[in-house]
Amino acid sequence: MTNALAPVDDLAARRTAAARKAWKTRRAQGWTPGGNFPQKSESSRAAAEEALAAFEREAASDRPDWHGAALKLKRALMPAPRTLTQKVTSALPAPVWHDYPVDKTSSFAIRTDSLVVTFADGEVVRAPAVSIKTRPTNIGRGLRVAIAFYQARMCWRRGIRFRPGVHAAVPAIALCICEDCGETFDPGICTVRTEEDRKAQDWKIKR
Image (cartoon, rainbow, N blue to C red; front, side, top):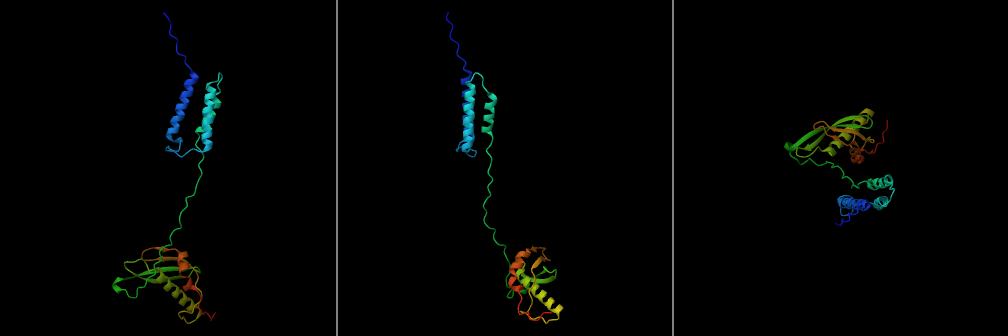
């Protein structure tokens, strides 16, 4: 009776096959451009190939250095550092500025909102902002009235007769609130929008 030769158990070959299978599995899970994960960089692919080569080299060695191979594998599996990129956004549109005529509007369609305007010198003025009921507060018209009230007050304090179009420069607007709806308007926008109305005009008498 002849004894059949027992198959040779090549441990190194089995380890190499297992490593290749694991590598193919990871590539199928996204380590390639067609996967679900971002494409790996050239340095990451080089580290992975180096780790696989180190594994095959140690598997074929009589005295394998598995610790060194494991370190190479760890470097290959570490996620690549992410580069933070700032999303480019378009400029925000300018806020809507409501300034519309009400002279030809029926009195039944009119409401009068009250503005409380604080100027940069600390002066506080309350002024009406005549608005249409179906539209937002007529902030442009209301601020023009507030500026006229401020000019008249300054003339009265200086003992000067107030005349439209003859006034000193009006300071910037520091705060603007609608008493009726509680809306606060941006003081910077209010200041820019009223720049022409706040300029000095023919102010010849100074006291």
